[in-house]
Image (tube, rainbow, N blue to C red; front, top):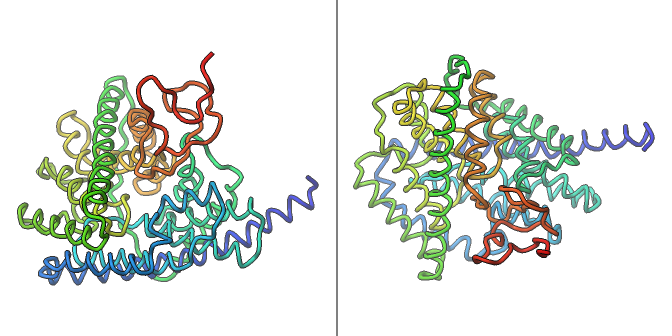
Length: 431
C-alpha cells in the first residue's frame, strides 16, 4: 500500500472513529446523568423498591411488544460483528437506556456496561450504514462502537479500546480495528467528560514489591476469583434457562425476579445490594469490618436480576463482588486491603468476560500503575481457570484455553462444551 493510501485510510478512521466516539460520548453522558437521577430518587424514596415486580411487568411488556429484535443484547452485538448480516436496530439504543434506568430506579441489581456497549454498537452501525462503508469497515466500526461505549461510560479510554478488540473473540485481538476503536474510545471519553459527567475516583494503593511469597498469595487469590466467576456465570445462565423454560412470558419472568429481589432485600435488611452499589465498592478499599458475606449477597442479587431479564450489565456488580471478595481475601492472606480490593474489582470481570488485558489496563487507569503486575497475575490466572465459559456465550473461540490445535472455524462459546468422548465443534478430526 502506498503512503498516500495509508494516509487516506488513517484519515478515514480518524473521521469515522471520531463520529462514532462523539455519538457514544453523548449517549453515555445522557445515560449516566439519568442513572444518577434514578439512583438518587430510589435512595431518597426506598418504598419504590416494593414496586420492582410491577416495573418488571412493564419493562417486560415493552420488550415483548417492541424489543424482540434486540433481546440478544451484548450477545446480539457480538454475533453481528462476526456474522454481519442484519443491521443492529437503532431502537436498541433508546430501549436499552430506558430499560436500564427503570431497572435501577426500582432497585434491580445491575450494571451499566451492557447498556453502553449496546448503545455504542447500535449507533456505530447506524453510522456505518449512513456512510455506506464496506462489510469489513462496518465490522471494525462495530468494534469501535463497543470501545466507545465502554470507554466513555467508565472513563477508561485505553481499556475501552482494548475491550472492543478483545471481547468479540476469546484469545484473539482484532488489531484491524485498533485505530477506530482507540479514536472512538478516546473521543467518547472526552465528550462525556466535557458534558459534565464525573466518574467515581478510587484510592491509589501503595506500591507492593512482587516477591515469591506475594506471588503465591496472588495465585491463590486468582483461583478463588475464578471459582466465584464460574459461580456467577453458571448461576446467571441457570436462572435464565430455568425461568425461560418454566415461565414462557417475559413480563411474568421479570415480575417474579423482581419479587425475589424485594424478598431478599427485606431478608438481609439493607439496601447496599440494590442498584450499582458504588458506596460499598468504595468501602471495600478501606473497611476491614466489611461483612464477609457482602460479595456473595451481591452476586445473588445480581444473578436473580439479570437472570430474570432486567436490563443493565455485569461490570459494576462484578466490581462490587470482586472488591468485596478482595477485601475478604486481603484479611485471610495478609495482603494490603486497598490493593486486594482493586485487584479483585478488575480481575473478576476480566475472568467472567474473558478480557484479561482490557481489565488489567482498566485497573491501571482507575488505580495507578503500581497495581499492574499484581492485577495481571490474578486476572490471567482466573481467566485460564474459568474454562470455556463467559457471561457472553456468543464470544467466539479459535483455540481452547488449555491449548490443543486450532479449531477449523471460530466457534461460539455456547457451542463449545461437548459430551465426554466427543470433540468440540470445529475441532480437527483425530488421527
